[in-house]
Image (cartoon, rainbow, N blue to C red; front, side, top):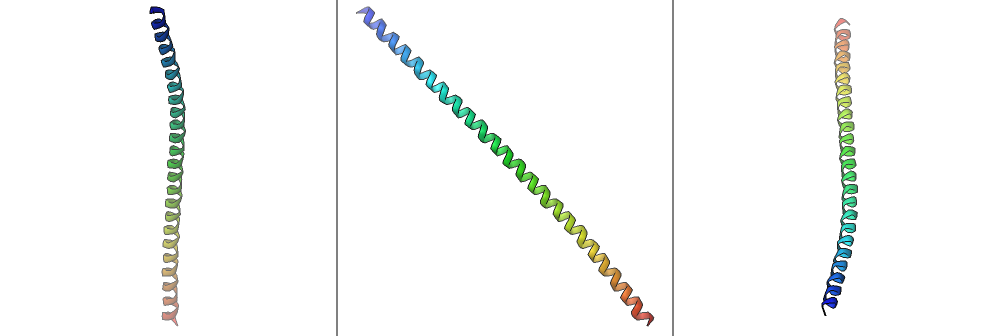
Length: 87
């Protein structure tokens, strides 16, 4: 009787150990999946920052070109005004 109880307890321990191994395996898989998703998130965040930098750079370039065009227009108006007044 005692040996049967011992055998049952040993079987229960073995079953629990197998369940623990399976749980550890699943936890490792989930951890790897989490790490992969975190990497993808970081890549997406960096990509977004890169796009924002490009957009900001383009805006600055546009503003600079607009300023130069405005200055050129002002210079042309002044030249036309001088030519008109000297005629």
